[in-house]
Image (cartoon, rainbow, N blue to C red; front, side, top):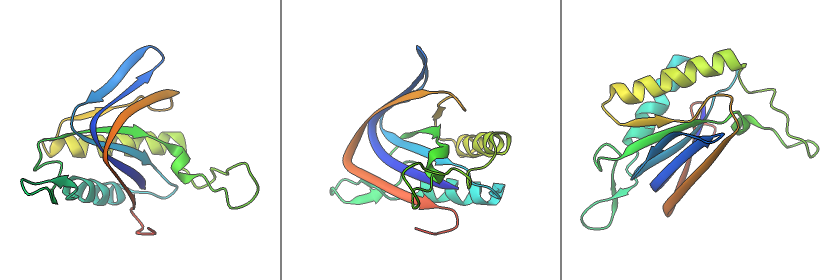
Length: 149
């Protein structure tokens, strides 16, 4: 699994004319599921993301997690995180999981975040979405469950 994590002051996702999820301060997580990913990969990313110390403490140092800061999480599925553009100019998405597997792990990931008591909003799986956010810092972190980066 791959994730792009952005620290935000607010974020919102719409599908069509419907707002499917929105948060105030917290994390926007763009989540990609790859072939062969498992619940263990999702568990790893949930723990890593919720524990990332990227919010400022009283001294202005990035020392607090989203949990410590009382923030929320907005999770948006994004299979294009598995786009491979090393050859040619049209990305290949062969390494992305099939939609049924991806949706199952996406829903699993969201459930695990909520089980931790963190407010978690979502996009709409397999929909064309518009994502709006204010990235504070800016702070953007890339994670891969295989620790490739």
